[in-house]
Image (cartoon, rainbow, N blue to C red; front, top):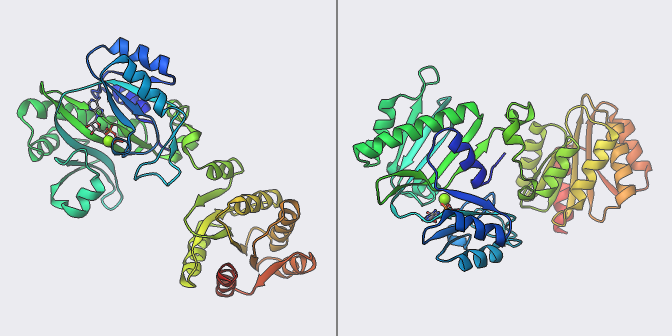
Length: 389
Ligand code: ADP
Ligand code: MG
């Protein structure tokens, strides 16, 4: 789960990580009074969306008067921000942050994430702050400094000094960096995070280190088992894929992709295999929807509705292995959904396993325009053929 910058900064402050003074605002009037409270000659208006790259996209603006604060806020609220990290529709701006404008001497990148290979939290730092870390990693990987934390010993002060020296910080700055890294590590562990990114961590003209931007990614499993109630309450569904949210409400695992073939499968492994075989046959999946191991007719119907509702879907492949689920029950769900919502794209169904004959018979006798497939290869071949026809 992702958080907004203002929420991540709120959490940072609980762990002693210094942040600029600032307020969240949901109207121009709120923005103006926030700016008044902050004082100073420059305030920054920052769009709150679940995406980075806001600065280059017009989502971060320096205001030099209260009127400018109001004007920029009004210009942003209610619109959608398209950045290089969003799709072409962008993300809705429902809130802005009004922050004190700081005098920046240096911009540094500092992040922490779980390195699965070493099974440790790894800190990454780069003197090229403000830039995309992916770009630095691709073009100048030697500029990224990494520090791996032993989970038993915890983050050691010498590791923070190592990072500080590598980033070219002065002793006074390294002292501050050490406190920041310690706070980040504690935050990472206590809040079940999977990623923290401060880009940029700035050094101000008067030698103070501050987290100017804040990105936090929380492990969804921690939310699911109610370990992080405060963070769970911060969830902003307006920033998430609508269909994925709708699917989750029905206990379905749905992922939006870029192609035009909708996939309904049971089990994540079968989903991967199905998408591989579709691609092998020259097709592109539009999504995959995993109805899960022990499902029922209602969930299958709901799943089918969700898949067919997407305007990008030009064909559907249902690929089910009946182990715990029975193929005849899947067939009933598909038939009920097609009858209820009507489907105007080709539907290829491949069933295998428990009660497969009954399932096939139900489909054949339904009178619906469903293309049966004998196996996965046959199914992929038929659905790719149907959408390119
Ligand atoms: P994003 O990464 O989405 O573009 P940032 O929060 O990193 O958004 O802001 C982009 C840039 O805007 C920063 O690199 C910094 O140069 C400038 N900026 C952001 N906040 C402030 C601030 N409070 N004072 C001065 N400059 C700022
Ligand atoms: Mg940033």
